[in-house]
Length: 128
Image (cartoon, rainbow, N blue to C red; front, side):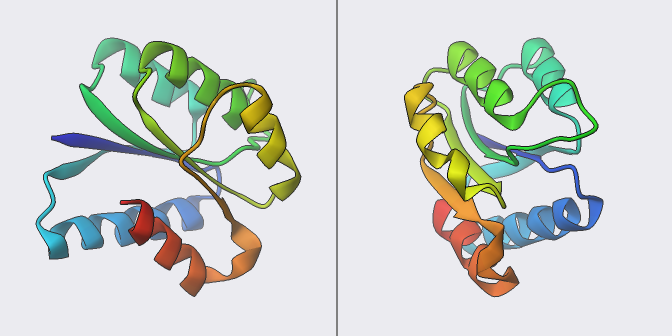
C-alpha cells in the first residue's frame, strides 16, 4: 500500500487537498491511503521516524512561516530517509523550483497554487 502524506500550513487548503486526494483514491480503488495530513513539518517527520512507510507519496508546501523547518528542508529529510519516495511541492513559490533540483530533492512535480483551484485539483489527481 502506498502511504500518502500532505503537509500544508493553511488549514482550508490542507482539508481541500486531503479531500481531493482521498476522493480520487476511493473512486479509482487505488491501493493507497492518506496516512497523515498535517500543518506541521515536524509532525510529519516525527511520524516517518516512528512509523516509516515502505512506499510513500508526499504533497508538501515549501514555506511554513510559523515553523522552524521549511518544506524544502522537510523534503531533504524525507529523501534521506526514504530514497524512493515521490515528492510533489504545492506552493506559491515557483521561484523555488530550481533550488529543489540543486538540493537533489528530485521532486516528481511542482504545482503552483496560482493556477487556481480547478487546475491544482487536476494536478493533485495526476500525481496520485
